[in-house]
Length: 81
Image 1 (tube, rainbow, N blue to C red):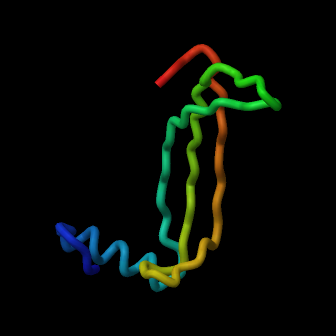
Image 2 (cartoon, rainbow, N blue to C red):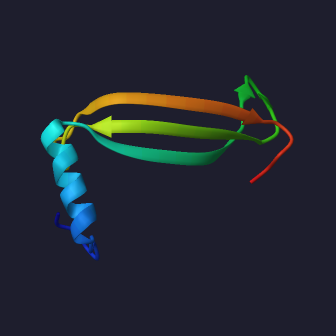
């Protein structure tokens, strides 16, 4: 792997290369996003939306393609970021 400041252990590197050979490298993504909805000239208050995704790509590179994804979305109306 090439990148700025990336140093992997030998086990992590071999694990990633093995996953790349099988064509499925998993990643996890967890976000908290503030959302405000507008209906014409009326704006709602800001609510927090929590998003979690499990994504798998076929290879590590610029031209990688998503081979599977699964996302969960939760609305947290009384919590702000």
